[in-house]
Length: 189
Image 1 (cartoon, rainbow, N blue to C red):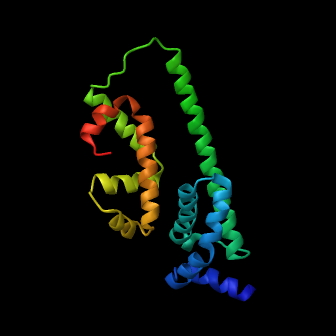
Image 2: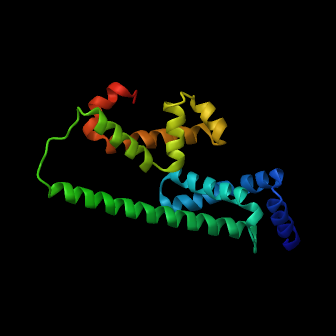
Image 3: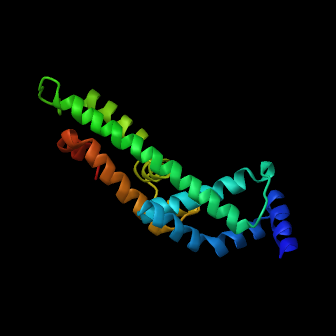
């Protein structure tokens, strides 16, 4: 078994696509389940696991692997999930701070008819989306790609594309609530 594991590591370091694919197929489902127990969101859990495999492939030449490939992947998914959760806490604190600040500022009518402000808020809201979610949204809305084309281009399932689009639209609606009437005229939500 040790020899087999070291052989797997060597082939991964040499970017052997067949071995990488086998490792992915063998471990993805269980890693996704593990990530889901930490994050409680299937699309985010899938993104965490995909990110780990992306990093494994992208940095394979610079990795020093020890132990089993399974233990490495579980540790990497665990760390990826912890970073994600930390980021979520920071975002939540920021949103609370903004809500508190807005509550204690003099009330002012929102400028829902200001296209320049809408564009700024829209750009900011897009930047705050998770990376994969933003990429899927931009490919769909700005490059007019169909879900199947996006899935093929990014190497993900059509269902994952659907999940990312749903999440992107949900988050954008929340962030741009004051501008929704104007947004519906500009974008086809």
